[in-house]
Image 1 (spheres, rainbow, N blue to C red):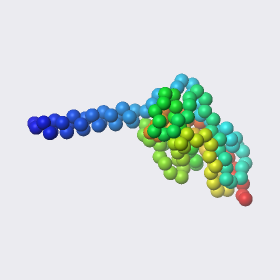
Image 2 (cartoon, rainbow, N blue to C red):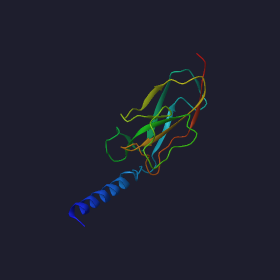
Image 3 (tube, one colour):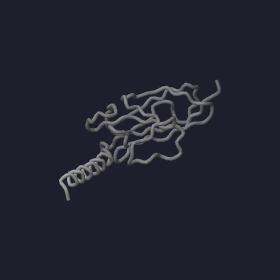
Image 4 (spheres, rainbow, N blue to C red):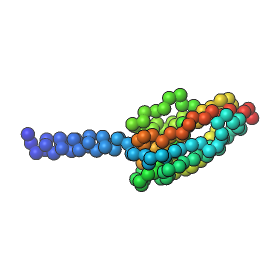
Length: 144
């Protein structure tokens, strides 16, 4: 085997090991809790809806920032099942990322019933271990 082949194999194995460690997830602080402060479960609201995030037992840090016992919020809108908890959370209309460290948002929702839920993600958007997930709430958006 040539030196070039050996070096290539070492680099490949290192990358795989590093990826495995990165994707393993970040431990959550014991007792950490995330919640939706407002709106309240069962509330009837008008759109746009301001959603305020609550967090106890850990801090908020922007995505990409590696500080102990921190993460950032992800808002799940009308999501029937939780996304994979061992991979970065999706980013789309139903999975909103707040990687800037935001603790509230204002969203447009159509008239009718909607569910909202928060989940904390680590510096690379992977849920903590164990995951820090809020209770799912249901709100009704009234016609304008």
